[in-house]
Length: 121
Image (cartoon, rainbow, N blue to C red; front, side):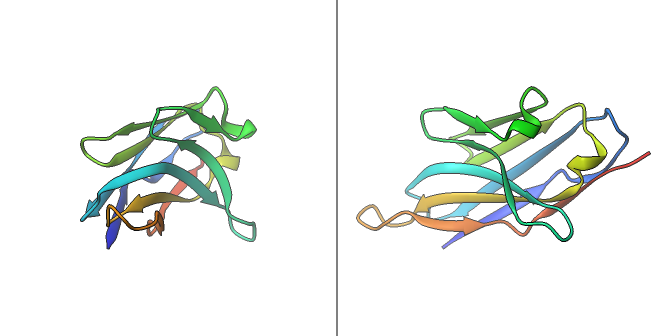
């Protein structure tokens, strides 16, 4: 099994910055994609940013130029650096990882518990 531990959320003023972290622990053989999603109250969960093994990244249009996703493969950790935060960025941010725990098995999807980000003056 794989456990995802998120950290870094909190309250920040508009224009401020936060850095989220998501560490994957367990008997991990390989991690494919590492992704951040967010869900605002009453809305669906949307993709924010993803990074694959090669380092290639994809971002939602709403965060391009403000957010940066990165990963440390040695630590099985993905980060989300969020700059120039806006009130509309307020949401619960979830880490999602596709990983193998068996070299001959399939990739399995795992979700973190979520971390609250609030942007308010």
